[in-house]
Figure 1 (cartoon, rainbow, N blue to C red):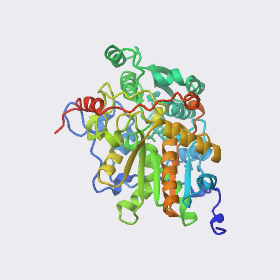
Figure 2: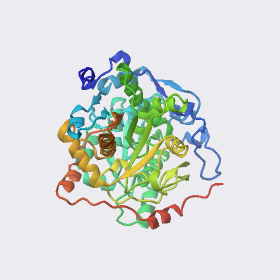
Figure 3: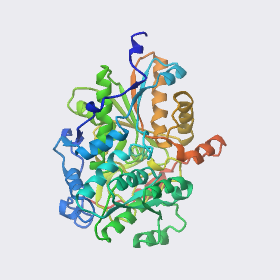
Figure 4: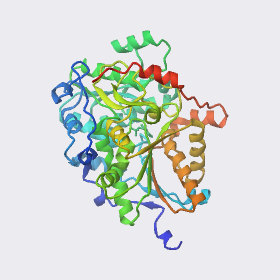
Length: 458
Ligand SMILES: *Cc1c(COP(=O)(O)O)cnc(C)c1O
């Protein structure tokens, strides 16, 4: 026990120990993630075809399955230093509360104004857009974290930022909207009447509260029809997982400093970027047969892409304007019930994580909304941090695993990703406290209906 205590509550890295290169997990995968396909020809998308939509340097990163390390440009390293290294926290207080022999650690990514890990990729994407001489970028945002992160990154590099925000969040989270406007972004509720695709979606689903899939379509249309603009995406894509590897690299460096080896690594999964980033260096060892970590993705029962979706090519957006991606999906037409983890409402999943999951290299579980908030509250009361609902999915499963250790007496080491803070989610917390939160779970028929519309790809 006394030896135990040598591990501090917070393990910080020195600035000089921060990662200088991102790690590209695909380089070590034997089964590479399936390529993006052109929806017209069904052939892999070429860099030239992606150029009207994405920034050039980011396309290179997107299509590169073999380069293991990409140097982090000095300007991005310097920006990271404003809010990184993120602490790796030993959850001594939670362990005590649970009376578990398990050792619990969490990597806290909420220490910046956007309140989540999204800034790690936003700053990289804004940097490459600026370097290319663009005027601005367009994007979608669900819960608002990505839009906030991107507006911060764009204001830093003096780029214009146009955000299509899922309508339900736009209405539920007016303060998020104002944070984005503070950083100079323009924010439009989606679906909107500003784009052709928005008009079509509204005609087909009148009164819809929107979805990430709709907002993506609108943002892509806005980018491709405005001179000097490109579209950027905050999750799902390979390039985003690449940038987010900074989370895992720092986590691993911090653990290595104290000779700690995790048994279980847990993260919430919306489009898969924080999880893909957190697990990157650990999965590297697993892929090389050096380690046998258990890796668990946690998703909401209301949007269960891994646990109830199908591994197939699908559209990335509702308007079907984006390339096809092979992923675990609920169908691009799937509009999840309005739950309170906006950042986990995407119908699909990163193609890299989808391949790893299909290869049996990671597990997935889905959890109900009220259980997630119960775990969030339990965590907040002992660890102090008020977690984002998305992050609380990981907390819930970390607690479950720690309680299993209590039964078996095993001293497992659990690491989970605490992706952000929940200050803008108090309406959700209020519903939970008032006993008014529901646990909507889609029926098999609803999922089958949406999956019946998958595109046909040989
Ligand atoms: C966006 C978000 C997520 C989910 O996105 P991933 O790409 O799956 O990581 C999780 N937590 C927070 C706080 C978020 O903002």
